[in-house]
Every structure is written in structure tokens, then in C-alpha cells.
Image (cartoon, rainbow, N blue to C red; front, side, top):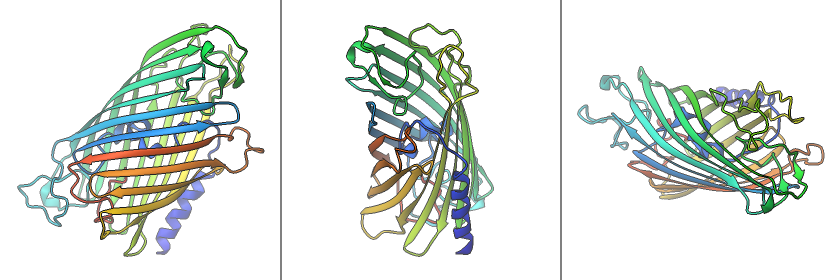
Length: 375
């Protein structure tokens, strides 16, 4: 028990070093393909369909976000997750749980499509992003795993000031720039649009034992700096790199409850220093929290819970409703702790996500200390 407490404290300690503004989602882990391409296919089952809706409101504006993703697994993945020792003639799901070395499995492929949009009917800017991802997942001995993924994204943005004057980059989904500060715009008739192709890559590594599972991952986005000025006025306005990183610990707490400790890092606009615009889009955020799950639940419907914070400037209760093997509903509400001191954190975010799984043989809490699929 001492080592588990030490690992939790260590993870929370590292989260203190990050700070910043801008949001995107509260539930980043519910949009895994948007966060890291290598997480395509990192789930328990054959096919996953996930949707995430976020309603965000700050002192300056409102913004709605929607993310929908579907991914599938191809290769030697397990279809008989309830069996402790699957027969050799049957295939084993990649990284579903620690398995016998005799199976000598080499991994599988994951492929997926993700759609993300943000905007508001009274806001001046909206954008859509369509991504296709491909990932390869590997095994290293019986309890180690790693993977790599690549992603191509088509992005389109539209500026129309006649729709409204309220804008706040804290709750904007990003990806595009236009010459205006946050706050109320001067009413005008400016219109503009931009589209581009974007390319991203990521990877992860992890190890699993019954006592503890850890996983580390990272990704880099905007590899080739696409132009992103919606007004086409700034030639140097190119989308600088985004980097994301995460750490995840699954800990054995007691026979009834298990713990997942998750840290997620997001930095947008790496190396960006604009000469034309007076602002900077260098944005840093950090999510950190704990989730508690029932172990081997007796019922098909189970409510689990957790708590997260963003850069220690917001508080975010988290509920996770598991509906047997097939569906999961997640809900969060993010509230600023001290918006008067940290005026960039005035946004309130209510989010709900629905994840549907096909081909999953066991509920999320079943065999919790064997599985390595917290996504």
C-alpha cells in the first residue's frame, strides 16, 4: 500500500509544474484520437463509437464543442476475455490483460475516424476537423506493451462577424487565427475562411502487473506548420506545433475498489511569437485526477466516480456510469476555483460523453487488475 500512495503523490507532484489558459475539453480522455493518434484502437473490444458534447460559458462568450470518433481493431485481438487461460487456437486481444508467453502474439492494428467541431450561433467563428488515424500496437514480453500512430486531418474554419460579436479564445477550439482580441468585437462585416491539411504523430509505452499498471505517452501535432489565418492577411501565421503528453497509473487499492490516476498535458503554439498580432497563442494546460472503480461488480449497471483539476485552478467532479459490456456514460462539470485572481479561468464547462463498445466480453470493472484498457 505504501508504494501505491507514493506513486499517487508522485503523479500529483509533477502536475504542479504546469499552468496556463485555454480549455478545449474537460474530458480529454473521452476523445482519445484527438489527444494522441497512437490511442486509436486502445480499448477493450472490437469496435468503439464515442461522442462527447461540451457546453462552455465564460464571462465573455459561449461556445459549444462536439467530438465523434469511431475506431476498430484488426489483427490478433481477444474475443474470449472471461477465460483465465485462453486456448492456444484462439486469438488474444492486444493488451486486454497479461497473457501467457506461449501465445507469442506480436500485436494488432487500429484504425479510426474522428470528427470535431466548435462554434456558436451568436459567435463570429466556427471550425470543423475531420481526422483519419492509423496505429500499430505491439507486445514486449508478457506484460509490456507499446504503440505508435499517425494521423491526417482536414480542417476548415469560417469567420462571419455578422452572426455575433462575442468571442473568447479561452473556450475557442483553436486551430485558426484572426486579428481580434478576446472580448466583444466591434460590429462589422468581416468574413473569411481558411482550410488546410494537417499531420500528426504519437506513441505510448506501458507495463502491467496485478499490483500496478503504468502507461506513458506523447504526441506532436501540426508537423508541417499549415497556414491558419482566416483572413489571409498574415503570411507568417502558421500553426505551430502542439505537444501532448500523459501518464497513467492503475493501482491495486483493495478487493472492492481500484484506482486510476491520470495526468494529461497540452501545449498549443509551441515556438509561436507573432510579429503581426500583439497576442500569443502559446497555451498550456494540465489535467490531473483520480478515478475509483468497483472491482468485479455484481450488477450490470455500476456508477463509478472521480475528481480532476485543471492546472489546480478548476475543480471537476467526474462520474462514470457503466451499462454492462456495451455502453459507458461519463459526465463532468468544471468550475473555476478563483476566477478573480486567474481571470483566464472564468469558464464553466458541462460535458457528457457516450461510449459504445462492440465485441467487449467483460464489463470495465471485471478483472480490473489484469486489464490495461482505461481508455
